[in-house]
Length: 256
Length: 384
Image 1 (tube, one colour):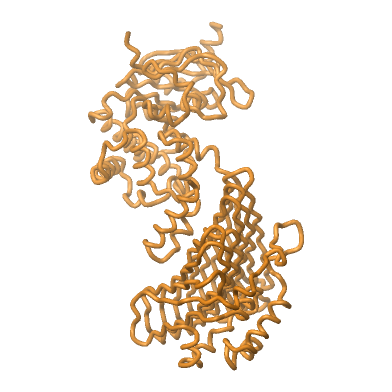
Image 2 (image 1 turned 60 degrees about the horizontal axis):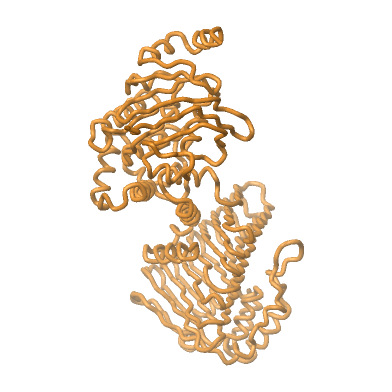
């Protein structure tokens, strides 16, 4: 029996007493790209935070497993050590902690002693270049005084450096200009071509299909009001591009 | 400070000078005893070991290259051989009239004197005051000439249970650049009362980098008096009481003339049952137009029983000034911690990272990497 997947089953979750997730079923396969699309407020970010283990997001029922292991029973750091990565929509600033030291600490926590500092540095410079980021950023404090675009690139830089088993990208594309979006796309493409990242399964959360032109999804899920209402192939994203969410909302509500 | 000068004109180590200073000490308002709801130090409860102070002596040593013309000696030698110079700094800053400054003068047995002549650069000098016995006065006087530059680090070595009274004064000529740094790491049952003062000359830069980590009680004040235009003053301080330590810090920047810049940055954290009070005062006199002053103090509480009162005191009488005050107070931010945890780093490690990062902007103001590393290690050890 193969459990190699990130599997969410019938998940209900609430935030500050309000039920946001109303029975989510989802599967992210290694090496594959799933897109989760939906308008603002549909619960996409709540799913991301719930899977990563934010203390404010309370699971009411349902399960989430990573390669067969119950994620929901674990603290956020243990989920990360199992191979889960969340690229935040709004990453927190950590004043006084330099970017290079932070990423090194994270890599050490996830893969203790796998890279000597010099090799880590070389890899970091390489990944930085793909993202078209200035090396001076490594000496700055994590997200402290960063522009919106810099924060998003730093999330992707960490993704590229940590090569997790499963990566959730929560609106990593929002607020990025065309060039930045291409750089992010290139970075993820490079990671997927690399031995470290070949098996990474992606859950790309977005409400615009733009990013999906750079990273073609294998599966597209549409989320409305805390439920996944439609699942299809990459063509579903193209349809959202043309028609928006309204027609899907009409279809699904008329069926119900 | 003409009255102070008069009292030391004879000899700062004379009986008369001491008696006068002691009388001043008894009269001086207890600046650390602030009435009201804030935690304060009860001077009566301090049980100052006057007897031990009388008997105490302090050994002075210097380490670092001394360029030609630089004088680094003990106070008695300075008084004997460089009296004219000494009198330009000793007792010439606000520190001399502060409560603990008067106490220091009353029980002074020696001290350090450093002189950097015009245009000379003193790269790095460490002054070590080593207490012989359980009580003593650590006194440092620094006089810098026109265009003189230098970095001076003060260290105090004292045994367990020691009582230290510290005074440190800096006076500069024009266009001088002086950095003064001190990391207070006394034994956890020692006590230290400190008063520091600086009087930078026209267009001079003065920088203080101070850390209070040790002692059961560390009460200190710093006064920077800007009496000449063009001065740039930077005061960076951190404190971190843990277990049952108390810290009481007062910084004051007096803009007595305009066209000067001051930056005060203070980071205070407390853990265990650590207690602290910080008073940050900026005073801009009515005629001190075009002053540019900022005061930033941040407070981080790492346990339920830790307590810090942070009290800004801005007194601005001029109307054409830039004055900024910003403060934050709180515990470790949940979202910040969560963000770090999602990178595989444990909750404990994440909190440690946040706490160490909190101090970093002040750590960065210390003049050498050796000091910065020493400070980071000491902070990490205190976080545990």
